[in-house]
Amino acid sequence: MNATTAQNVVTYPVIVSATNPEMKLLPGMTASISFEVDKRNDVIKVPNSALRFFPNPKQVRKEDRSLVEGTAEATDEEGKAVQSERSLSAGERSELRSKRNQRHVWIVEEGLLRAVSIETGLSDSQFTEMLRGDLQPGDKLVIGIQLPGVSGGR
Image (cartoon, rainbow, N blue to C red; front, side, top):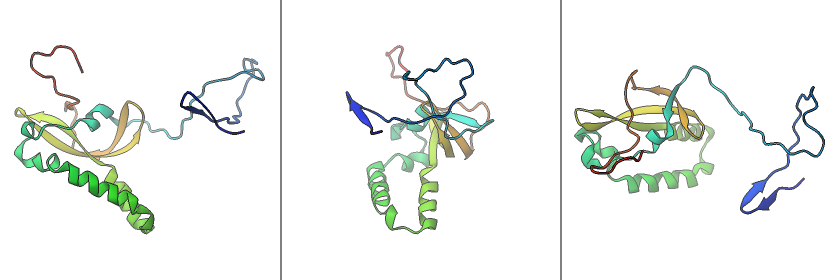
């Protein structure tokens, strides 16, 4: 049972036990399945596009500009931290992972963008769980900027 690659897609054979009282699954058939590795109910979901949004510093209120200026340096430092993670103690690794879950989303306040700190949890392809944060019901998160004269888009 080895993995196979076809057109840059890696397929892993697995053995799954499933109830089949109606005999709809027969030997030799293939099936597409999804594995639910974790689940949370009654959570606040943040669109992943809001987590990916990165504003122009000119659109951000003065108090939050340091979050968007000098990001190349921050990214380089994060890369160094990941490289040296193996040499850290268990407590230090836990703290580093916790920092990675600290994110910012943006809301419009008085015509400028304001950063809101949140701590993230589980994520899928569309939404990420917010564990803690200063978001309030009704806050509208920025997921992109529409340029003047450009219609449509996201």
